[in-house]
Length: 216
Ligand code: SF4
Image (cartoon, rainbow, N blue to C red; front, side, top):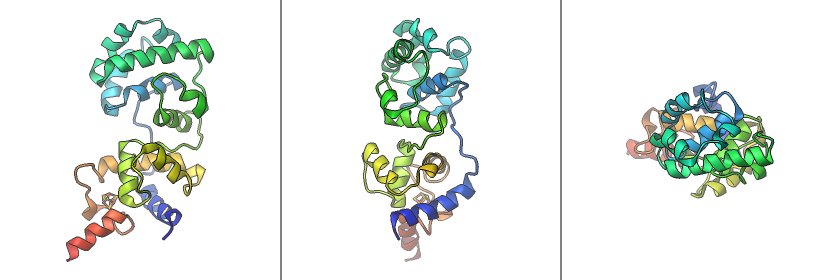
């Protein structure tokens, strides 16, 4: 089976399992999503949502964040971890948006990844979620599942992204990654994938091997 054929078989099942994959970060504007995504590094989306729920009603524009000191931002985001770095990045990102982008979140990978704290993963979230552009988001779940399923052997997120781009048609990229994340949270967990009950276990490389072992 080619990688493309494998992708379509996996997609068929994941589409049934997760009908409406959605971003689990709460936001009402592109800038809010940008801040929330920066905060989500090494932190759960649930924790980020708790934190942003108290921040965004008061501060939710690049101007507002640019007017705060790093310390002020750090205090508000402390419970998301790595807060000093995140505070510095969010402030610098906000300043750059005000000074170079008319306070608007840009819509290209090139411009997004020039912003402080914005790597390819964050940029891809913005491109897919806000602008509806093709985007492959490789977070810890997508990375783990793509490997287990046999879609790639790469371990570096940038290499995984370019490997998947070769056979996943653009229109399916963003939703497929959302579904990988949903499946990673629900069934294919990092510690122990529940292959026995997984509906992908006759398609997924790791699942097939696991079933073979249990039959012996
Ligand atoms: S079969 Fe196992 S390894 Fe494959 S997706 Fe399902 S739980 Fe994960």
